[in-house]
Length: 241
Image (cartoon, rainbow, N blue to C red; front, side, top):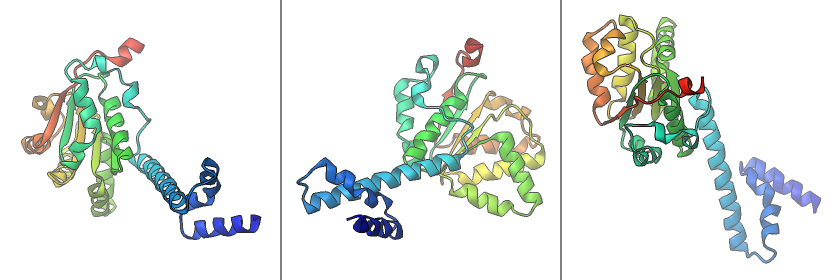
């Protein structure tokens, strides 16, 4: 019997269906399970295992600084956003419809938390997600161009179905950085989703970008087919401090 277990485990490994080696778990659940029911249960177990592993890979690849869930977010603090709308976004239809989200509001108002929470939901739904601060993305683009790997980086970003750009407000960008950021966002228009958070309303984005001629075009692309969220809320960090 032990020899058969080893053969089953070997075949499961070679066929890349590792959950099949745990077939005894299914047998223990029902002593009189039929062949078809047993096979269905085994296939479901394998599918569930693959789905969980895919979610873990997507979450790791997303690069979240930490994990924040919707359950941990006090929705009562979101003074200008309805709870129902948050849960609607969590269904990820905005990604399927290639729509954007722009969150604008004060520091500590929950923008990053909500961005991460929605990003996690997207990973769980099977979407490819990437989380970057605006400063980190700008640096990556400049370094990639200097090393003649810009096209490679741009292709990697294009494969991402939800690009989250956090903290578009703390640093200003020179003309070179502005143009590179603009191209990344522009290339995604009507193809895939962007989620951006900023402390500054659109009229103040001239404080961020040296190349001011791009601002109108950038805002135009971001707001087309987008959800604009007012995130001016009481500061979590101030209360916790």
